[in-house]
Length: 422
Image 1 (cartoon, rainbow, N blue to C red):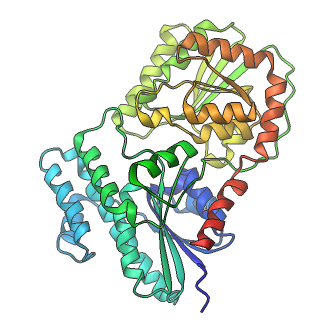
Image 2 (image 1 turned 135 degrees about the horizontal axis):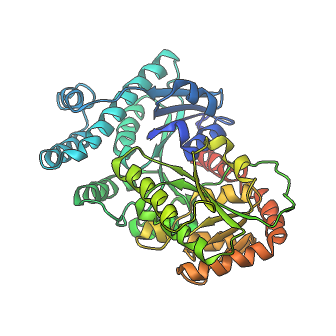
Image 3 (image 1 turned 30 degrees about the vertical axis):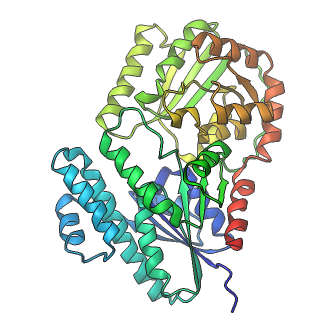
């Protein structure tokens, strides 16, 4: 009997509406497999907009609260696996001390509800007794994906488990409590070796996972953007327009890019497209950035604009000249950052300027799409910006070449081929 994998389940805690990595993942896989997407969702219409018509969504659209999770999980109505109970126990013990971690109770609730909905959908579609792959995005969903693996392994001809690690989860983060660190450590130590394949966002991250956990089957899948047919813009004004897009996170110290503008000629302007998490810290930080612009008398040169949907961000950025990202290696996940904004800059045919972080440096230099500052000082970064501005057409031509290689179709095709070989 042919045991080639025909069905893929993508399992995530993510709110899928603006998660471009998972959107790209499922839409590409849907070209070769039957794909079920178990995800959180805040907008049904938006879900239909961003997903391929061949993807079968299993969205969780509610918001489980502590009482619901307590009654469903702890009474064992949704899972019989001891490790799920251990997670609940860990979270509940911490919950008694720090109630901000109640979100992890909700994570457990999301996962178990989606898992049950998926099993009902598979039974209804009679989509059993086949070969299947389960992709866990990201670390906190991994125990639940393994629980699903154990369940389906009794019914399917062949089941494979893939863990897509979006960050270096064994490394420390800035401003996190011990509970989160210990929970990640516990999950990695108990479940990462259960996976048939581990993927991550860069070659550097994959190598670190391989070394740390003695893994034999790994591959990198970068956060590339969809290919966009965008002509190289010819400058017809003296104004140099810089652009940055991403989260309004205080750990990233975006104020350094505001301070940068004091070191550049007055014909340089900077446009931020910032996404807030609606947490108090993110919203407060956004206000801090706005106030800093006013305090430095840069209101006519630095602008904070409303975020734009992921599917139109490349087209919007093509209006600018240079994409910039100044970030320091204050934790390992910054040191090995490989953000999707880098590839959006390339698809928008911009020149690029980044700080000398390992993964980003490799891409910028290998494809010669811009400059890497010699160090992490804002003064050095300013010199790199001016250098790219003085050679803008050259770097835009190189970004155009790179865009044909660094895109979703090329990158995610690697995963499709790998799944067929598992």
